[in-house]
Image (cartoon, rainbow, N blue to C red; front, side, top):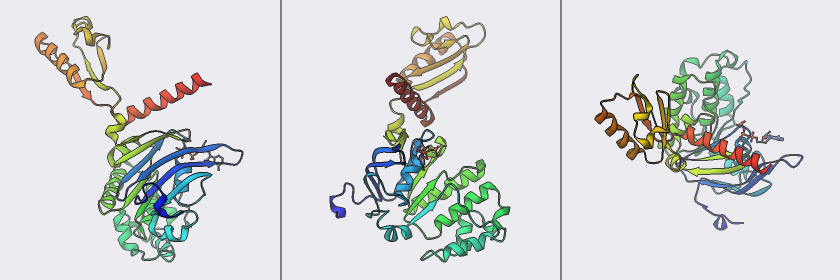
Length: 314
Ligand SMILES: Nc1ncnc2c1ncn2[C@@H]1O[C@H](COP(=O)(O)OP(=O)(O)OP(=O)(O)O)[C@@H](O)[C@H]1O
């Protein structure tokens, strides 16, 4: 097959009807398709066991798909590994370095197998580990090890970066530092494929995303696309002495005692009704909070809907 007869052949990553089966016949990836244009940050999200790692391993060329096709930079990453591997950086969930080496020795060892490697000091500065250069790997904290994993993935100035749960174990500041670095890399043109359990991370970084459940992609697009169908939310508390029965009729059902939690597909109109009523009635809406659906709400809703559908089908 030439690259010309393949869909989206100019994209950095293409998965076309990809399947992966494990021994015993269990299908962990059940025919998924997506493509990632060059320079985009694409996040793969999903419930536990959804098939994210199984998919990413196919893209990294660590296994061959049982159906469908994968292309990375126009090549089959499994059969043409020698062509693809030098151009991608992979940050695995478990780095597994020899723990007696220092941070710099570890980078030098890796650099020996990487063509055009950055100098160790440069890559350590990038990930904020400059001050730990002479420390043995076994003395690093969990978060520092994740940063060393990232440093190794960046050593060869990759065109595509695979980040599997890159901020697990990092504290809030470390996570934000990593986000800043990932944004800088993307701005410099690196294509990034990210898997994460933190929806906030996908919200902060992803240009587009796909949510997987039981080996399939159940929704994909920009964050705005994925959250578009979900209701927005208005929350507040009524002051003592103002019964919920005084609320406008359309909003009354959302009250539970003094707490009111409104779900609405017409946020602006519902807010207008509420605020007009509050002003006319001279009522303070305590802790008023109005927001569009978040990725987290969309995700939980999707997971719940699919689990309910499966129960009905069973
Ligand atoms: N080597 C294997 N042999 C058999 N089944 C496997 C193997 N590796 C993974 N699986 C199964 O395939 C399914 C998908 O696993 P995978 O690790 O790809 O999911 P994931 O979305 O990355 O999950 P998590 O978010 O929990 O890391 C799971 O049901 C898992 O138990």
